Image (cartoon, one colour):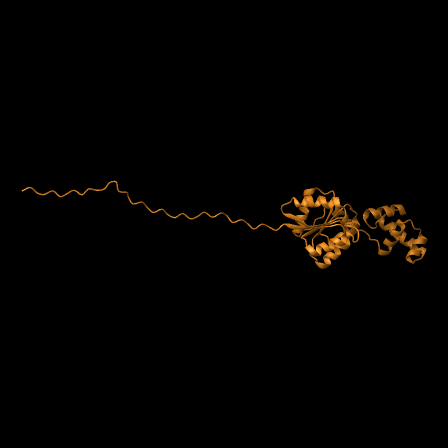
Length: 242
């Protein structure tokens, strides 16, 4: 009797093998951008329109700065400062209605932390001294290179003081030297107008002899030997304005 053969089980070779599950890949996140720093708000005060326009054009090309106001005299500078509260103010020294030093004093009366840079053509030691004493944080001449001016704005905005070495030397000389009294300045101003000792005495209600004493003191303190030299030196230093 023949034994029955067990049927052979056919396997489906074409069947797909189970594939491993793909692991979920984490989404790549782009690096966070740092918040953009606010631009330095600058107020410009100068009575010359060409100078103002040049400064506005220069500053507006800088991505970290913006111009918030333009003033053509000292009074307007104070009013615009109160309105905009700029980070840095560029201020001319000699302006109509209110000069630069007086404008600095009024602005700082409202905020003692106001940051002001004097930008002027006058480099007299008395000019520098009065501006810094009033509270200016920088003193620059208008022939300063463009990038040096921009760097000075950034430095003053950061809380630093910016006075070039040559101007700082004049300031040091002014601080350490002998100063003229208010009366001597008054005499010097009248000397500049060509007044005689007698006329000066009459204008200031002092004797001619007292005027002579003041003139002698002025000559000694300024190290000059004539009225002409005294007036020229006083004008150059910013002691008087003709």
